[in-house]
Image (cartoon, rainbow, N blue to C red; front, side, top):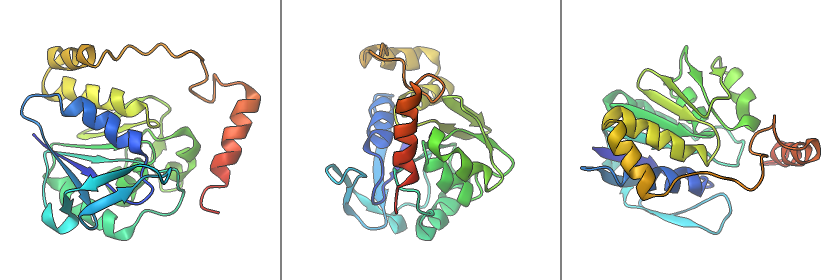
Length: 209
């Protein structure tokens, strides 16, 4: 199973790393990190760089395509969108984490679909005619989308269950000791205290300004 992870400036590192950590544990998985040009690509903190081992022109197909999100509300890069349009028809599964769904929408992969994204970017989907869901993971045919960064782990486990069976997915989950027990119950707008929700909403409203 060839898994291609798309990297671009200001991607969210956990969107890639969390998903990669799960899928890389599956038998027969080959991973490739792809960017406009091969080399280091820096995440949205400016502190974490991942190495793209291939350029867009090097990869024309993949069994699984993973598109991460970003903390940036800028429009998707047209060059990357066009590459997704080329690769998506070749995939068995196409995935996005968080705001990576905006790239899939721009590429036409979410036409007529319901999809997940980071809660602060829900309007970006509805503005282009995609129905937003606040579920952690949403399936629309061969396309799987997820909520924000931590949901990428759930997304990857969901894919393993579909592609390799529940036993493999559960084996990987146990190997990673993925048993979430967060110290605070503030992981969604519906659960977070109002002042925390307002603070985070304000942060996202000022992205890329």
